[in-house]
Image (cartoon, rainbow, N blue to C red; front, side, top):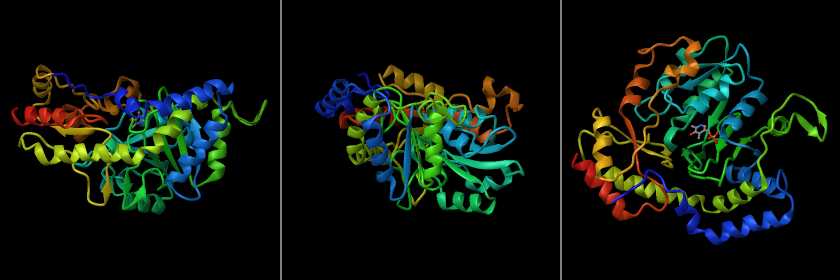
Amino acid sequence: MNIMTNRMDLGFQKHQAEYEEAALMVLRSGWYILGKEVEAFEEEFAAFHGEGLSCAGVANGLDALVLGIRALGIGEGDEVIVQGNTYIASVMGASINGATPVFVEPDEHHQIDVTKIEAAVTPRTRAVLVVHLYGLICDMDEVVKICRKHNLKLVEDCAQSHGAKWNGKLAGTFGDVGCFSFYPSKNIGAFGDAGACISPDPELIRKIKVLRNYGSGKRYYNEVVGVNSRLDEIQAAMLRVRMKYIDEITEERRKIASVYDEKITNQGIIKPVQLTGGFAVYHQYVIRSERRDELIGYLKEKGIGTIIHYPVPPHLQEAYAYLGHHKGDYPICEKYADEVLSIPIYNGLTSEDQEYVIDALNNF
Ligand SMILES: *Cc1c(COP(=O)(O)O)cnc(C)c1O
C-alpha cells in the first residue's frame, strides 16, 4: 500500500480534455500575459463570490497578501494581527510591507481565537488578518464586529478556503480584501503559480492591478513603485476550467472528511471540528496526537504519507527572530506544532484508501 498525502494528477485527469483544450487555445492565441483569459477569470471569480465584487489576478498567494495589504496603505510602523499557527506566507504578507505581525493564539478549531483578538489591539493596529486555516472557518460575525469597533481593516487569507462559508457567506467576502492562492495543491489549483485578490472596493482592486504591473495603470506611465506579479493567460484559462468544478471538488473533500469524522474512533486522536455555522472545505484534515512523531513512523510503515502543517510556528522561525519572541510566548501554537498531523485528503482518494487510513489510525 502507498497512499500519498496529496495527488495533483487525479484532478487533472478527471477533466483532462477540457484543460488540454483550454491550454491549447492560449498557446495558439499568441497572447500570454494579462489578456482575455485573465479578464474573464477575474470577472468569473468575482461573480462567484457575489455581486458588486472586483478581482485582480496576481502571480501567487503571497503576492495577493502583500499587494492587498499594501493597497490598503498598511506598512512601516503599523501592526497587523494574525493567528500564530498559520503558514509563514500570511505573516510575510504583512512583514514584507514593513508592518509588524502581532500573533494571537488559535482556538481548538485551529482558527484565530476570536476572544483573544481585542487584547492584541494597540494604537498601532491597522488590520486583522484571518486565515481560515485548513479550510475551516471561525466566527466571522465576531471578527467583523471587532474590526468595526476598533476601526481596523479586515484581510482574509483564503489560500486554503476556496468556497468555505460562515453562515452561508463565502470566505473572502467579509472584509476589505480576500487573498487567494492557486498553488497546484490548493483546493482550486492552477498548474503553476497563481493568485488573486477580491474586494468590494473597485478602487482597491485598481490599485492592486497597478501594483502588480510595475506601478503602471497606463502603459509606460508609472504612478508608484510596483512589482511584477502578473497572472498569465494559461493559468487563468486553467483556473476557469477548475472553477467550473468547485462544488464537485468541495463536496468530495467534505465527504471524505465526514467519513474520517465518523470512523476514526481512536481516543488518542483528536479530530478537527468545524464550529457550528461554518461550512468547511477541508483543504487539510488535521488530527492531533500527543504521540504524533511515533504516529508518523507507524503510518509510514503502513505506506501512509502524512505532513505536519506546520512544525515551527512563525514566532519561533529564524526569519522572525527580530520580533524577539521566545519559546513559551504562544503555548497553544507551540503545542499544536508538536501535535498536528495532516492525513491524506485529496480529490480522487478512493474509499478503499480511506478505509485503510481509518483502520491504521484506529489500530495505533
Ligand atoms: C499556500 C498559502 C499561501 C501562499 O500561497 P502561494 O501561492 O504559495 O504564494 C498563503 N497563505 C496560506 C495560508 C497558504 O496555505
